[in-house]
View 1 (cartoon, rainbow, N blue to C red):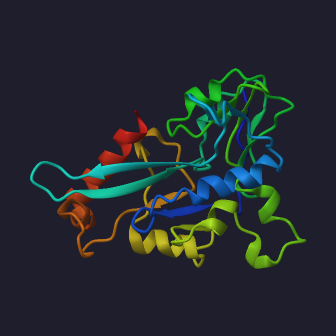
View 2 (cartoon, one colour; view 1 turned 120 degrees about the horizontal axis):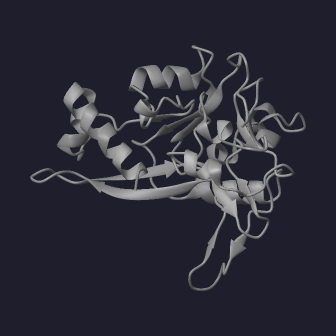
Length: 245
C-alpha cells in the first residue's frame, strides 16, 4: 500500500468554499472540465454526451438541496463537491500500486495514471465521493487543484488559481495556503467557522466549507441558528448525511 509523506507539508494548498454565496451556476464545474480536459489528467471522457443516459468524468459536481425542517422556512443550499485534499487521505493509503499519492511539497493529492490499474479501491475509501473512474481509459481521476495552472510561470500571478476559482461569478471559492495563518483561506475559515465534513473519519480535509451566514434577509431560521452550537450541529449533520448517500 502507498505511504503518506513522512512530515507534514510546509504548504497546505486547498479551497475555502462558501455555501452562503454559491449560487449553483455550475461555472466551477464547466471551467474545471474545460481546463482539465486538456491538462495532465485529460481527456475527461464523456459517454453519450448528447444523448440519453450520458455520463462522464467531472472533478467538480454541484448538488442543490432544500434545507429546513417541519415548520421552518425553507432555504436552497448549493453544495459543490470535489476533492478536499485530505491530510490523512485513505484514498492514498489503500492504493496497491502507488498511483494515488500526496505531494510532500504542498499536500496536493494526485493520481499517476501510468501506475493506476483502475481497481477503484481509492473511490471506495473516499467518503466524499471525490474519485472519478474513466471507463474509457480504465483509470481513476480526480481534482488536481489545477496543479499545472497554479505553478505555471508563464501566467500572470493573479491567474495562477484553479479553474473553478477563476470562473466563480459570486466569489464563493477561494484558493490559498492553509499553513499560512495570514492567507485569505485561513482567515475566512477562522472568521466563518469553516469545517471539515465527517470529522469523525479522521481524514482531516485541507479544504473547508464555510457555512451560511446568520441574519441574512430571507434566511431560514435553521440557517441563522448555524452560529450557535445546536444550529451548527444540525447543519453539519445535514452535510454529513448528504455526503453519505
